[in-house]
Image 1 (cartoon, rainbow, N blue to C red):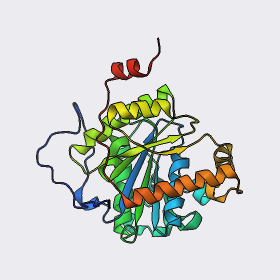
Image 2 (image 1 turned 90 degrees about the vertical axis):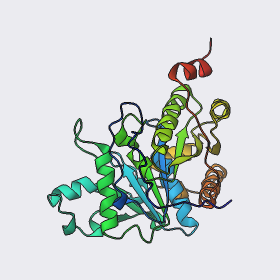
Image 3 (image 1 turned 45 degrees about the horizontal axis):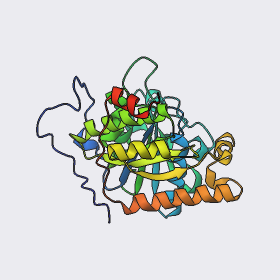
Length: 302
């Protein structure tokens, strides 16, 4: 089934917020991304979101798609395996011109990575100040001002850690599908449950839906699959705990640049299969989150 995406901004029929007590940075309709298919990648901190995002970007590019990856983390290392460096962030560049974006050129903040993947690091406000949602909004606005989204087929937002505030959830306002990276352990699945809740909160007012779960760094997937079955999620990929993946990041390379081996070839094929599946599209997951106590009891052992 082909994924049909309505890219028109969704009108806010009523003023309800995304969640109880929510104070959110809402999407300006003028900054909607356009015709590209947009994915936001979430998961517990340290679970491998940037590695997953970068290799998925390469897989899309090898399918002939024009890909833009946007890192949404103050440490701005989402794209370094693609560019082989820590590129300047959008916020750093804007500060240099006193936030006069008209003085910037695309090459000031967009960098070409491996196999033509275009890379942007949004960055973030200084620690303890500002809002990540503002940073994401300014980044998308800047890309639109320079017409950099018009010829893009796929946009991947790589978002830091668990969703703990509306700012970190703001990429969901732009995304068609949210992908959750998890491992086969309690903490990762607990974080995934909170992410599902955040996606559902944003889905009240925006077009984002849960696209599926990517099992990462896991030999087995039994606990992931059990939780998915109980909550309406669907595992769409399994990336085993292969040492070549860890080594690729140390070598500042994507997995597609690593020497061929049965393990590397297998994971490359899994990324290519996943990219093809996501491009073709399909029905989103009708996922529902558990209460914290319920998931504790569900996953815990006596």
